[in-house]
Length: 415
Image (cartoon, rainbow, N blue to C red; front, top):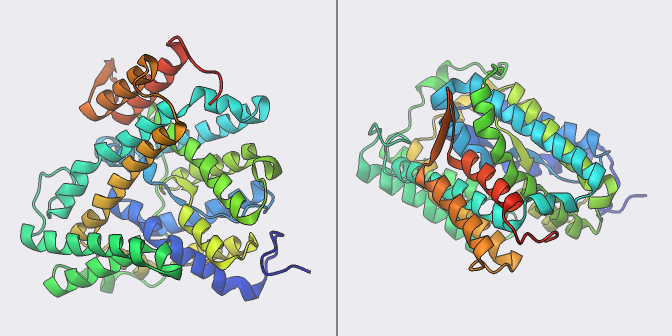
């Protein structure tokens, strides 16, 4: 007989409400990515739910974790949608999922240590920092009532700043002072507070909600072949691949199970990769394991992976409610801008923390060269072109970091 904290998979109708609660914890971050990038939030809900089910099948239902929209891919989605459109961008994102799959096969063949040798903290840390810093202007522009690139003023600056700062302050305060489940949903609380403020200022347009049907198929968008998008986006898979290790270790420390061995880190990464490729094939953002939900598992002490099945089913069901997705799209951009001010800074700090925790001497010539060049190439806008193909930004920084780590003398074999 299973105890409340049993790690054995059990799918029971009485757990449906608990599963919905897990989705509620992930909800703010889940819908934020599509709302920021112009993707359909209903598609993101569907691919998060479906991706989680795929992950459970591949990991034999052993890991109580939920997969949803990845923030690491925000910069390439921003750039890709503007440059190649959604179908072309989805081709690159699907290829990033294939990178996960290849990494999982490499880990199965050579062990997990091979990844730490190819992608040590002196590579992954600054790459993650570039992801956060390169998006900083987008957050500031949206918080000030402009379009992400600053080209168009959408709302009066004073109104936009008030709305964005309310959203930002609420997110920060809930993350610091929140208790229980509120501690896990600072982004959702920030969105709600910012939205209420936007309603007070009269900058919310509900006209599209009235026209939307109650039930509708999500607006699936299928990828179109685009080699340039693949070359640009694939290197960005470096950062979330390493983050995946941390998430699996975190949930293992909570449940007391060694998921690196059973079902194996190669299986969890394989599940993440196939879920990401599937999401991209349907027009959704890439998936990643959600630390918010891991926190909820720690809070509730319910380790049954079947709870995540219910969370996935709930997400898929909501994806077919047409008015729901349309309502989400009424959230004004200054609300998102306020959240992004903290979010993108937090991504940068995660990269910085990766470097600090590694214990490496960053003033040592080899480490200094790798970190410095990744940061300057990524943030400074360096680009290399060959014919019609261009490599720049985070993709260039990621490839540069890997190459420098492989070719510069003095490399340590194990971190």
